[in-house]
Length: 310
Image 1 (cartoon, one colour):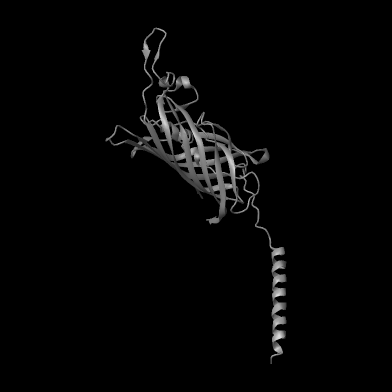
Image 2 (cartoon, rainbow, N blue to C red; image 1 turned 180 degrees about the horizontal axis):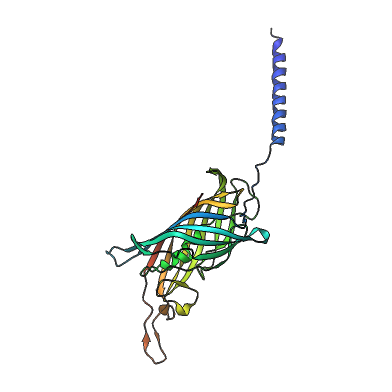
């Protein structure tokens, strides 16, 4: 019986060698994680309908001990997106029209979007907006930030796609501009391919993105945006930070649903004040010109959402 121990040791050692060899062979044959190409697809004649909503809450601080002024603007739209044509390098032109919806301010209806008013947009294959026309900001009558709704807020609902194929878990950074906010400048979005996710009949890429972008907007007296400082009554400057989660249908090349939220702290100032010196000074006539009044820093909270309707 004692003679069996060397044999047992040899068998055990041989098993270890074979197991080690098998493990090396298996690791050598292991397949790398698959790459996914995420691109928009524009098929002329295709029509998609989206339920779009947005909320802008502005908070204006008052003197110490007083409650801040809070203004809530809600937008709820049913929109139809028609693909007009595909473009070289994977881009496309689409026309978006509103089928129904309303805009409310503090619970009261203040505007009804013009039905079938068309906005034409051109995108590249990554979903970046290249050109936009026909965009009009609805006036809400007395909402200082009403002009931001039609001109900026609803265009934040987009997906940030990579320039090259990526694997699940990979991240990428893109330079972006906010459509409809003239003079807003270029920001950046860091996006991550989180996982594959089924949404209805679509296999989608779940993408999480963080957007940081400067804001510099001119508003007219009726709260519309303008690129002409001479027509502006107020200027809005600050930095916007938003987080988005989107489901992108890979085979179809379109957004199935997306949502985002974020905020900005902005300086709101009459344009006339920006033309005056920051400190008291002497005018040509010798009179003392007072500095511009100190304006409160306004907080803007944003929520946006977009869902494909079959």
